[in-house]
Length: 347
Image (cartoon, rainbow, N blue to C red; front, side, top):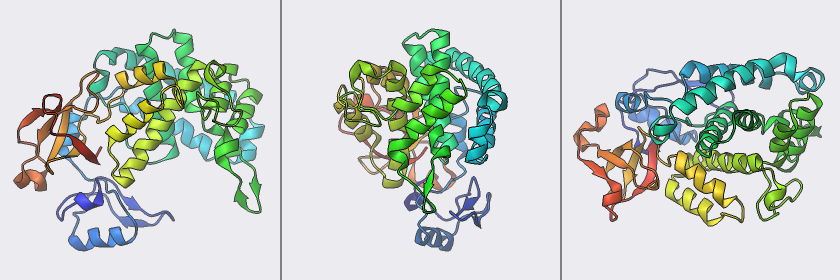
């Protein structure tokens, strides 16, 4: 939740840890005005608040929590290895078999939930590089199933999404600091994946996920159909997840993110894949607490295809905010053009 929306008495859902690993506040503690003010002074912009009503709304997840955790464990082990160890040890013997088995489960469970994909939890708030990789994987698998990609292609897509930023771990350093990750990590990722014989398509996704449809991307300046279709889809999901994460800090409207991405169809992104992506990806996941243009708060309780910016919401009565219970009016925003979502308070 945005720290500007928190109130004394709210309960922390997780530990608050600073960039140096120091514990600031423990999970389960009740916030006070002093705590909120001090955390804001330290630069904290979001707080994980225990919200039983949102948790109830979010109980339907696209994959079982233990499957997501299995992926996280694999990547946590991989990310904690030293760069040289990654370069000299086979990814196939270390992790790939386990990741492939878990991805099989991801595809199976996502397929079962495809009919209600807009109303189950797919992405989670991005709190780490691992969260980002898993979010991108789940988002592209949902879209891949929607456009009816074959199973083997879906496997390449999912693995390419999971490994798309692998090159960041093996970047060389200059004078004790990292060189420009933004433009070279795709090349290092491709080389590492090819070296370990992970697959040419998966390697291409790592190499091409920052290319642009108009040829102005990097590292190779590929354009249009020169970019593999799976790379084009991962580029969309990667941008979206990063944009939503940034918006959590700035309060930018999700509608603005979608509008900007659609405006860049066939310029930055493949328009066909972009439309398919927004058919399977809600701007406002179920359980999101949002601020409306009339300054009221509401929970998102239902999404509809082709109405991404106008879900059905339930208002939070002012007297209920201390206990986070939504007991107000239910409004279909698609039927109320004068009422819009201006920002997300909490995912």
